Image 1 (spheres, rainbow, N blue to C red):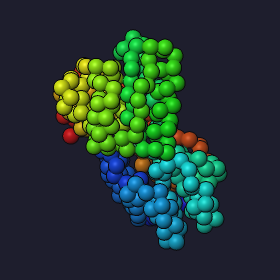
Image 2: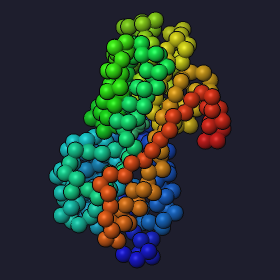
Image 3: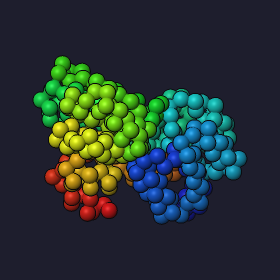
Image 4: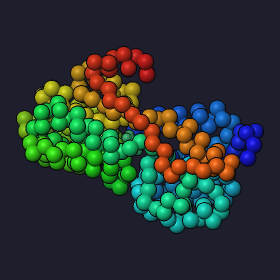
Length: 295
Ligand code: AHR
């Protein structure tokens, strides 16, 4: 396909919804990238429902788009609709999260290494606490690739430290409200003095947990450590205010890699089945500077 033809590509993007600050940043960055490439870009917000994602994929198939980019809410339940896209000859590129279908049904899966993210936070916590810590975990949404793999990566690391254990774990559904409510229940049932650290699968839940800890009369990041993933702008404000300890960046700029893969596939080029997006750790020492730069 010629470069000029690429600029006229019609691409359907099936997003999970707007469940977190990172998701919104990812949506905005992806829309900007599509506009910069001159795509006829069709956006579907599934509002947190897989059935809406499946409906959107079917609609894009009927519309005859050149390609579909999908951020799958959960890892299961995709075989049927992916086979429909395959039969229609419409390539599907996964972005952000993966899924449990035959890899022949999608071009590639673009995203971060969620397992490594959990492992990196586990390693940070082991060093920070010298291997002794009773941890509460705020999980992402049930069934989401990011939650499943972050939980596994973290657990794989802390099982090497007999003094570290997860004493409570529950989903906060990626939101600050959810993180706050679950943390309030942990503080009530366990007692803040018995909790060493919070492992939150994303920054929004970490921010909610910090609020709950403060309202319980404790100092977040000191009385109870808080670690999370995403590096959204707001976490840098919370960190600069001395309320969380570390965040691991999940790049919102994955659209470019997804679009590159789609264009390469349409041009008949080979595309690797997995394209990993890296992320680094950020600490309070640079939080104020990062917040000023990102807001
Ligand atoms: O799939 C990535 C996760 O989904 C992010 O960490 C979270 O903020 C979003 O809801």
